[in-house]
Image 1 (tube, rainbow, N blue to C red):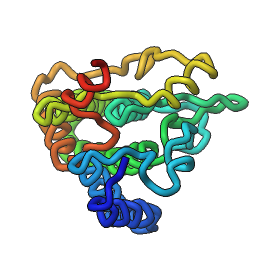
Image 2: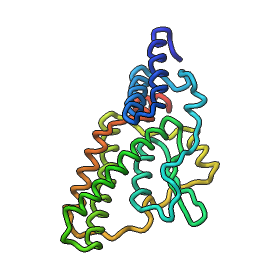
Image 3: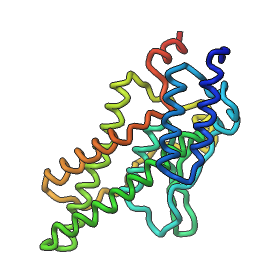
Image 4: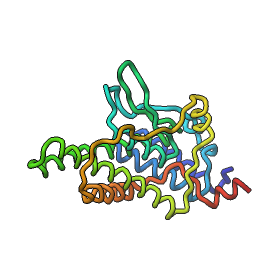
Length: 237
């Protein structure tokens, strides 16, 4: 329940959520992050905000277009980021085609999409950089190096998200709406990445990817959709 002294804060949070619909990706992500920081600081619940019915409704939105085959690393990347924001990555099937989507609350889905798109482009750029650095290698060898680096990056990303939660005493809690939708659709978590790709024997490729992924998650620094451990204990008591 919001008291009178918090009305200005609620108004500010609502304005930040409105800015989260901006076409400017960086402005929208920053607005969303600041809105949730204020909610955590002042212990304001989503039901205290305007438009809660719209924000707190579980749904799913696409992350990629239909293609003949979804790359292993895209599946793994989507699952890792979705987990960090209490969402679930799913694979939609069309006729001989698949595409990635994310299931969760609207504001959490936006955070997943923004982070996923940023990380996907980052990885694609690194793939090109690896190719340019190793022109002396065969196509198969370069592919193995890329796959090893990407695998390390995604595990580093996961480690970074987990470290952020631990440092802030945060406990990931998937909302009842999302859990109900997962149950309704009879979804379950499977292998995030499917068939494992050919990888190099160079530990340095993995370690470099891991370090980069961990730094990437630290720089992203979006604490969205979490409840503090203390608040969790209060809810259980």
